[in-house]
Image (cartoon, rainbow, N blue to C red; front, side, top):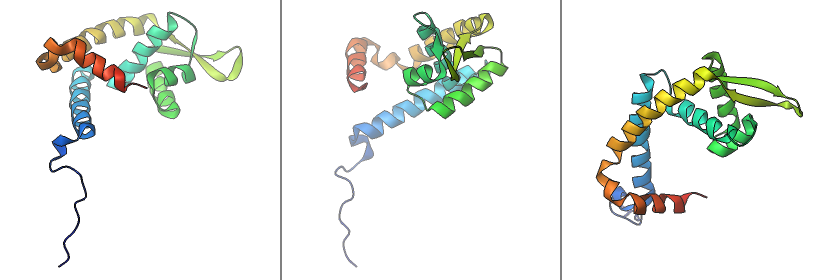
Length: 148
């Protein structure tokens, strides 16, 4: 039997930064989705609501702008926004300047739900990141370096 060459340049997956980031991200998302699920929200819904909230403080917001800001797929963003619209969290109206575009408005109900969800997100983050809190400034700086 022929000996197969080594596929990976490391012995254990934990030696790979991408693998570690993937594992941490998946655990964090699971924690967030479990907690936000109690409010009938997903992490993606919360993220788009929060993105809309921040962007709308500066400008009118289209679906495309929100997708770009949140770094999400355009089609997925549209589908999530349809759900949020049915929940009366977001209103989508035709953009007067572009008949193909939709302007987004977070409703008063949406703002209240976002406020409640934010408290949950804060609690989950506190618990999730408690082991690195003493190194928060360094940790956050390292994460920011990875954002392109």
